[in-house]
Image (tube, rainbow, N blue to C red; front, side, top):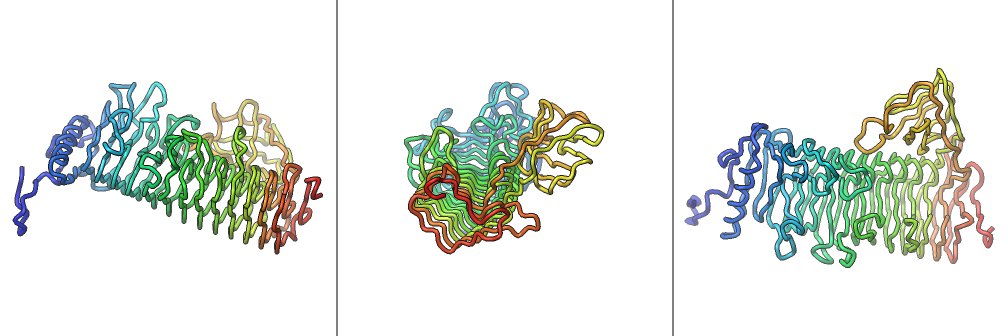
Length: 539
């Protein structure tokens, strides 16, 4: 049907904006609205293919039930609600426990998505997706909230996606696309943490070639099964793409906060990564094709109180820059250079510049993998080694347990002295996030969980054990081969009344300095000594 746009003399279709209620969707939370949504998408998609004019489906406030199958999306079709809490899509599969039920999907495997057969000019905005009703006999990484591949000029804006079985917003190969203001909560609830997907916002990359122009901004990812926000190269033979930015985002209580598993030159700035279980920011080869990110920049971020490491960077050819961040109160290392066990690749030209690194559990900066032409410059590194308390244990009337804590009224622990340790109670184990003189505050057993224990809370009075702590906990530790390292203008010291950072610089027996430029560093004021060198040729 056509009409005339007033004052222009140009005939335009009247269905450029469709009220979903006028086309069979009910929004009463009872009626299955999926068939009507699919029919409307197909009709409008055919019209777009004919005249090139994009259409919008407007869903007024209501609860729209999407049951037993997802909606195959079409180019030129946008889905817009009246806001989070007003327009809500509820996914469920009571009648089909085998297949996942995304709200919208279009994939290479199922629908032939490709560069030539892509989705274009689509906006998904101002609504909520509740995935809690999807149950599967086995985990399926396609059980997403949104699962589109090969998207051109997409807009994902002001969405609340929660409790999906797999990734919340799991869209791949996004060109000239913006993801903005998306909140992803408790997604990946069926993921064990070791499977594909299971993230809040997970974006596969590489399908468009060497440049993918994507911005992820002002998003929040909390309590998701694997990553809060991550990028993952999808094919080993593809070049890692440039052009991706993540800015002003918040990642909390995920396995990893933000991860770069295969980009080239990823820019992460102004983000907050706190309380994540393995690392606040992660670069490694854990992705599908075993390719780590390279050449990225992490700047002006808060990376605080992650259960293990603040930044964990490994398996990368290098040229990463970590600049101007606060890296604090993490349970193990503030910054860790590492590789997976099967990979011994040295990183080139990693720069750690101008960061505030303090009160981490063990070392402030630790190099556990080969580093060539690296630079550790202009940093202030202080009061690390907080995991200074020795082995401990107890049982009896003064020991009690809750879902998130161990309390020993007879203890006199140094505050945060057990940070990052694993407490063992019979067959139970849990990770210590922080501690007071008498209480261990525990991390959830997995992201989004409300308990720290798998299999129930230990009984009152049961015996607990805490391991000893490493005797050396330095501001900077070199525990792997380095060559042409620049270590300059760093202030590495301990300001605490009871000092816990044992040394400013520690070169272990596995660490070598090779040729190096060490100038104008101040290592005075640590608990034991300014430096310790265990490598024979430098001792």
